[in-house]
Length: 377
Image (cartoon, rainbow, N blue to C red; front, top):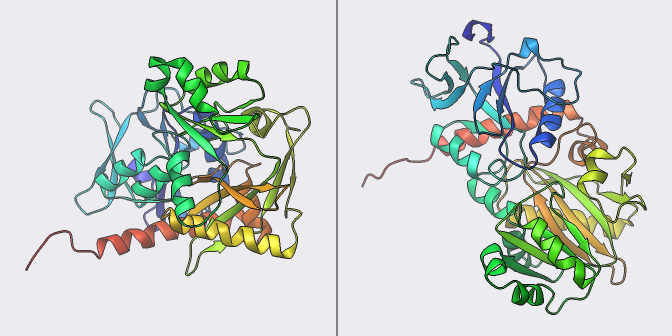
């Protein structure tokens, strides 16, 4: 296997799948990244994590580049990520595999959701001492938790919608008290959201008290902590942020779910080709556009993110105020995903965007390695 890898290129592992409810979204995102990575610069190594958590090398030659989702190939050899003797990361075959080790330079973890985007896999990269695209352990963890992210955004002066937080433990021990606490000080409708999921998985718009319990039951299938947020009459605005010499915020886009969807749900995002209309750029005046771009940079910095993020806001139709919704440290990269579309509309084409992200990861890795790892007086 190792002799297939071209030595003078940067060896990029495209890591996809994962043990998350967003596993299938990751397969779509990674297929798009695979198609757009510059093969004159990068040697691409597809590695999947299946739903059982096994890391497997997938032969690039056996993957159709035109397919919408990357596969996890039958009988793909199981691998593990280690630090090689020369300081580079290495994919090592698990005992019994006929495949040899593969030296790598950087991992592009095109994965979303818990155990993928929440600091867990980033911790693996840190322990293996390999470069990787995206935010580190701290920023990944706090950004994934909608409650903690909102708290940090508020501390930085960015408005958020009122919300309440419930834990699964409290909900199971006293359901009636939890249902009352869930909407205390709020008015219907509210949105029920797992705190640590993305792609609108497990989210419900609740318009009646009778619907609150079933919505919470479903949300607690995905997380131990659930956020209940005040529904507001708002427009959904998104901004893409890219790190560089200074933080660059794209022009904003606006998502307009079609009338048959209550909100921009998982179905509207990924299953319904007519699920939403996108305005890119968003229909904002110059002052509003400048304001939301500045807020996106402010949130990115407050959460100590790296490389990239998509920052989502609500624009309150009544007050004209932007309210921070959430930040995605590894946003979707599918053919219809807004992060690459916003960057392209702002002058950064998809292929160039991926190249920048790989080099940002390598630069950050070199900066970390310039730090002292031990104490000497």
